[in-house]
Structure formats: structure tokens, C-alpha cells
Length: 346
Image (cartoon, rainbow, N blue to C red; front, side, top):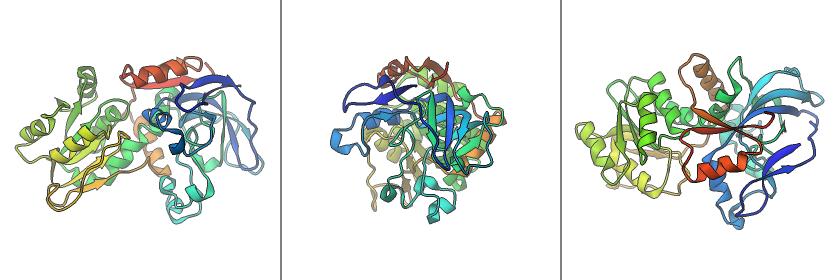
């Protein structure tokens, strides 16, 4: 079968031919319908060799949906032909966090060598993929797989971040979304669907600010050195009760801290390498700074329910499997305004 692999440190992904997989006991084989292209892949592929935590080559794709093609021995509750989404942050299934459905915070994954598909295990950017356990599959329930596949990360990750801040996202509050691309434009929709807050969106590109307005942002601000001051002006000097940074670069993290209100949440989601100092006097009183990871299995089901209700829709552009390296190149150079989706089987 064909697959898109990261094969050499520092090189671009390649389309290669690899053996067809077969499901072992307890595993499920999917015929992949769609796989998402994500900035996280580029962040990993930009690391030096000593910072890559898995062996190469690696089949990419940590966002995946497909149809069940074969079941390993002992698998029940699924049938060949079922359309499913892959829950990506695999865990051990038995630790305290996994028992809560929070496999994204599994306490033993590193110890046991468990890695997400596309980020250590063979991913979804191939004609077929193996899912290690049926608990990591969620029914699509009639959703368009191309529209749904980004929800497994670009939907789940902002949903998880927003959900933990719901006590502060009350009517009259303000939420700032920094970076309105793949994850950010979904976050704006989630904020509008889940809360009654005012949403202010920040980005460096006017076309992305236009997208932010189209999906529900009340205000848009160019993300420059004056952005935090403009947020404070828009909020009457108070600042934002919740700031979600989907870039995470040093300048945006600094803006996030400067735009935060007293008793606020600053959530750094992006992998841009920025850090926000925490200490008395460095931020407004009682500001909480967090750096969450992905989301829980139950939250993925909730995100898909929101999509079925028409509350969130991911803007996508599609590519064939052979065009996947081009999609990564375009993403790297900022020429994808939405979410790129690969169609491995046409």
C-alpha cells in the first residue's frame, strides 16, 4: 500500500510503498477515508535527531477516520464497514487517568512505549492503518468523514481547552483567540456554541482575520506589538477572562499574558516554543497558566455531537495521497488558511 512517511531527519515527507498491515489480536484495521495535516507534524519534523522520540521511518497522520476493514481476534462491538474516527492520544488503558477516559494524560504511556498514531505509531496517512484497541474508535454517526477528520485534533484540542475554562466563560466575559487557522477557527465556533462570551480573535494575516469574523468572532485585531493594548481598550481596560494561544510562539505568549484580566485563564496550546513566566507581579493576580494536551475520549464524542448539531464546521481543502508532501510544504509556508485533509483512497 502507499503511505506518507517521515524517513530522514530534516527531509520532507515522502510517498512510499510499504507492506499492507494485518490486525493482531485485539486490533482493528481501517481502510483510511481521510487523514488530517497538522502543524504538530511540522514541529516534530523540525526537531534535531536527538529530540525525535521515535524511530524513523514513521507513517504520518494523527488525525484519521476510516471504515473498519478487518478485526483481530477477540474484537467485539464493531463490524466490517463501520465508519469511525480515531481517538489519537493512546494510553495504557488501566492507570488512573486512563480509567477516567483521559488517555491524553496517561501516566504510563512513555514507560510502556505507547505512542499516538502518526506521532510514534504508524499513522493514518496511508491506505490502511492499524488501531491498537477498539476503545480508540468513535462512531462517525453519519458525519462527512472529510469534514469530521480534523475534529479528532483540531476540534478536540480546543474543546478540551475551552471546557476546563467554562467557569470563567460566563455572559459578559471576554475570550481572546490567538491564531485563527486550523485550531483557532474551530475554537471560535466552539466558544460561540458553548458560551455567551465576547470573542476577540488575533492573527497576523488579514485573510485569517476575515475567516475569524466569518465563523463568529465579534472583534478581530491584528496580532502585533499593540495587540494586547487593543484588547484592553476593547474590554474597557479589564482584559480577557480567558486567553487561548494556538500559536505558542514567544511574541504571542507575551501578548496572551499582557491581555489577561485579573483572575483569568491563559492557555498555551500552540507548539511555538514560547513560555510565560509565572510569579508574583509577573501576571495579573490569580492568573492561571496551563499547557493542555489533546483531550479525553468522552470529549471527542462530545465534539462529534456538536458537529452533528451543526454547531461547528471545519473549513478544509483536500489533497490526494500523492499530493501530501505538497500539502505539508504549503502548510509550512503559511499558504493553507484552513485545514488540509489527505484522501488516501481517493
